[in-house]
Every structure is written in C-alpha cells, then in structure tokens.
Image 1 (tube, rainbow, N blue to C red):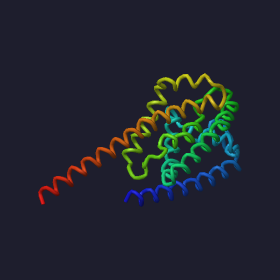
Image 2 (cartoon, rainbow, N blue to C red):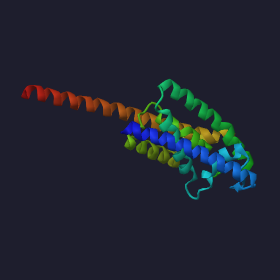
Image 3 (cartoon, one colour):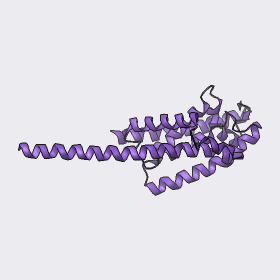
Length: 207
C-alpha cells in the first residue's frame, strides 16, 4: 500500500514538473514576472522555487514542502545513491541562492527558497519516509522548527557570505534533524523487534 502510494506521488510529481515547465515557458513568452523575476530567467526562477518564494508569510516552508517530493523520490534508492544526489542538490543550491541574493540585492532575501527546497532531502537521508507518512511529517516539522529557532551552531553559519551562508544554516538544520530521527528510528526498530520476540516467546509457551 505504501509502495503504491509512493508510486502515485512520483507520477504526480513528474506530471506537476511538466506542467510547471510548460507554464513557465508560456509565462516567459508573455514576459510575466514572479517577485520581480522574469519567468524566462531559469536561475532566478529556481532561486525562488518557481514561484514558491512569492507565497506570503511562509515562503521557506513552501520551498521545503517542495523539497519533500525530492525525498519521496530519492529514498527509494540505495543509501550511497541518496548521498550522491544530496551532495549534488546542496552543491546546486549554493550558486543558485547566491544568484538570488545578487538579483534581489539583499542577503538571504525571503523570496529565495532554493536553499530549503534543495537541502531538505538531507534530513531524510537513509530514512524510509516513503513507507511511513508519520515519520516524514515528523521530520518535516522538526526541520522547520530548527530552521526557525536556529539553535547553535545553526545561527553562527549565517556569518558566512554569499550562497554558502544562505545554504549552510539549512544544511546544519537538516543534519540535526537527520541525527535525531536516525537515532529515533533505530531505537524504534530495536523496540519493535524486542516486542515481537517477547510475543513469539509467549506464544511458544502457550502452545
């Protein structure tokens, strides 16, 4: 059931990606803009999450929510492939975020959400979030809380300039989240195995 649901999410994401690409092409032809970024400016549009950064009050959360789709896709692969993909996404996020900073002439402008969008899969690295929706939701909420509150050393990373400074705080927040849920998930699996073993022992005695 969860695998079937995951396949549906991937198909939906692919369809939405095609729809967004077509929409951006059309809007680019008509010289439409989002938050002051022309639709035909690919790097600019990527920096604002193809318009997600224009959402009032919660642009970063909207960007991270889109990044959640990357997590659902990547978690189906081996850990090493996930790691390579995450490194690539973070590497792409740095210059794209820096481009957005130059475009808006403002350090870490709220419209720039490429950092949240492209780094979120780091928070789910190696976790079976496609099989456990509650786990995915918990990871998402925790990562957003850490990003908002910026406990040490997250806040200190903002001292870095350019795209590195924009992306690094999200990377650290995702690493904290990954650490918390990696430990929590292993504890959960260990507890479940112990309960199953105890239940089997009781069943064997009764027989």
